[in-house]
Amino acid sequence: NGTAATENVELWPDQASFLGVGVSATADNVEVLSATSGGGGDRVTLFGGDGVDTLTIDGGVATMTGPTVDHQASGFAEYFAYGRRGDNDVVHLYGGPGADEFVVTSQYGGMYLQDYVVHTRFFDDVRGYSDAAGGDTAKFYDGPNDDTFTSEPDSVSMTGEYMGVPFVRQADDFIRVYAWATGGGNDVAHMYDGPGRDEFLSTTAEAMWIGA
Image (cartoon, rainbow, N blue to C red; front, side, top):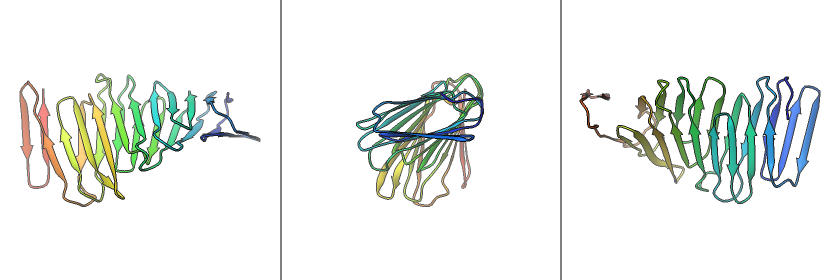
């Protein structure tokens, strides 16, 4: 457990390190790693291992499980996590009761909440979930190759490849969704309406779908 000072914790597949004001510690050959922040703007970094790892962060509690990892961290102000490109690692990020922002690129997935921030990199599959009550926003940025953006009333996704590895980005139940195709490639967007009254606006540079 941490203190009220600002501290950094790193959780690796078989090792943990702790760095605080005037103190540092390392634990080796540990199968299950757990860290709890004591406040003070602490930061935790979780690293994936070989095989398919799954990271879930919900309500300030992060769990990462896989063939070589079993991590848990809670109460931190900042969460950083690194997957291994091509291992089919998956991230599930859940919003909170306030106005949250979910941001994804071909290499990155993040969730910005009132109480903490999440940054993830190199996961092949990143998914964000809104509680649909706080005016949440999702932002998609494409990669350098051919990407496909698909928008439906309750779910939006972007698929493509980066360095020869397929990736998936998905946002569910967000009130507002924005997507930019600025990275290159021949990108395609598919937009589907809902059961209510919808409005579609389009120019040569952008398109907008507004649903009830």
